[in-house]
View 1 (cartoon, rainbow, N blue to C red):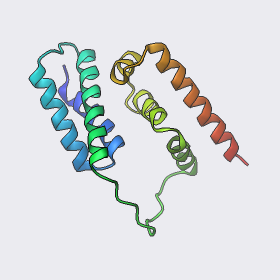
View 2 (view 1 turned 90 degrees about the horizontal axis):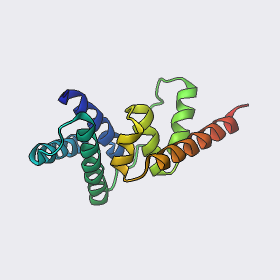
View 3 (view 1 turned 135 degrees about the vertical axis):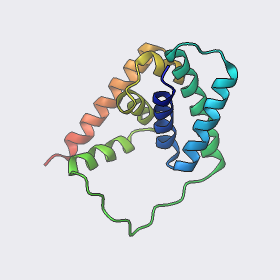
View 4 (view 1 turned 45 degrees about the horizontal axis):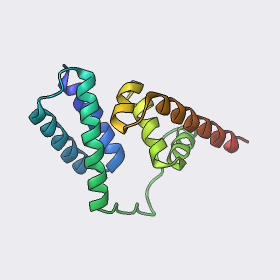
Length: 146
């Protein structure tokens, strides 16, 4: 099992949820410590399910414990194409559970079975909610077109 690949996926997930490198590193370290102490997960899929579930709970706990700092008003504009900015804004306009689904499915490229287990929902619910979120994204991006 490639531990570094697992670490990268869980770190990206925690960083996306927390927005802080230090907080994400702490959450990932704690998730891996709990996984290694449990000794229960033998396959890669089982390990991912366990790690996502623990990381999600740790991120929720951290978010409840701290409030994010507001961004400064004089922040320089990023050097990215406008369509990337529009997509990012559309994703950020989605409800947080839909953002999480889109992130897990299309950024971390997780299979539906892993997402379903990590979020405690059926595979059918993951498919249905992902399709609904993508439909909302398409509608938002169509509204922005001239």
